[in-house]
Amino acid sequence: MYTLSAVDSFHVSEPKDTYIYDIVPVAAGLAAISSDDSLRLLDPLTLSGAPLNSIRRVNTDVTCLKAINNTTEGDALLVCTAGRDGRVCLLDPRTGAKVGEVRIGKLWLYELFYCEKS
Image (cartoon, rainbow, N blue to C red; front, top):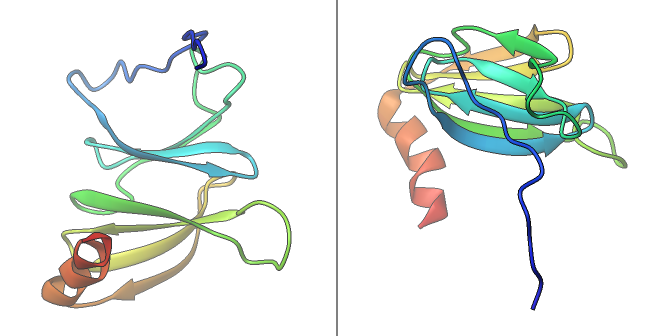
C-alpha cells in the first residue's frame, strides 16, 4: 500500500464558484476544462501558480476534453473539446490557436461522448 500526500493544488479563483470538469495530460503540462467554459494549461510542477495559458469560451457549455496525439510518438500536443453547442474544437493549448472545428448535431455529439463511456 502506498501513502500519498498532496504537495500542491490548483484553484480557479475567478469567476467565483468555478469548478474543473476534466483534466488530461499533454506534452506541455495538464489541460483542464472548467464550468466557466475555459480551457487552461497548467504546469504540473507548480499547480498553485497561474495557468500557463487560458482560452476562454472554447465551447458553449463545454463538457468533454480529449488529448489528441498528432504524431506517432511522444505525448499529445493538441486537445479536442466538445460542448452542448454542437461544436467539436481542436486546439493547441500552448498557443490557444484553434486548429480546427466541426459543427454537428447535438444528439450525435451526446452519443459520441457519453454513450461511448457506458
